[in-house]
Length: 350
Image (cartoon, rainbow, N blue to C red; front, side):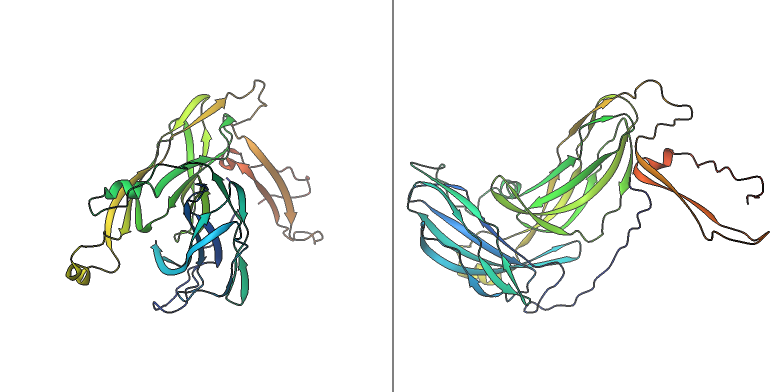
């Protein structure tokens, strides 16, 4: 753990209406495609997403050079809102249907847009066009589609560590991230991981999960850190961190009804579905401490520093002087003993 870190929680209360502007998080502009490899002549989707710029979106949208593709349709504009633990995220999407016309690798450069008085640019995207079929033809979803399977393709929980080979007592930072391409309105931890062979301490995370964008296997996800733990192995060998299980509430849209009167009575915001996700397990290789530990060693492994300060460097006889000794660093600082201070014989210690 990092010593002497003060955690501050800033709560921002925002009132909004559907047509208003939401400023819960920083504005971002991201580009993605539904797949990075397509067959010659095959169509694919380019999606530009402006996040947290309000439901009206931006202005002066400028596309990159698309001369390597045919523009078959677009832009189709849509808006959405996501509620996760009280944090509101708004997004405006601009979707284009493109068709490949040459074999090779092509870069789609940044698009730009004005929002909030600034100009934002997307990330570049690479498309590889190959001969023949790029993937099996998929059937369109129907009302009888497996809802759980559809959610499972777009929602998962991942556990990561900053190191997987350590010395006994060395700090490991464990992070659990929730990846989603669907609207998650709520989540609860249904089963915490087991830390057999470790001593662990939770690292405080904000109550309002901050979302970021990550690309996994060519697909873009909204990602939030839901748990962080500082672990310290108490024994050597190969140790395992068991999975964490999380119960989520996902908002989905039902398939288009065949009866137009059914559509009139449908909830325009869809319906909520409970869906459980489970993280991966992680194995950690722990080496024993080397022989020859110094006298008084209590198992603290890490990088620590000690500093001393006094409130004044000159004083009068019998006037108190405050001496402050500070320990900081990375590691299990609680295993360090209080430092022994040796003062000259002319000083009395209180």
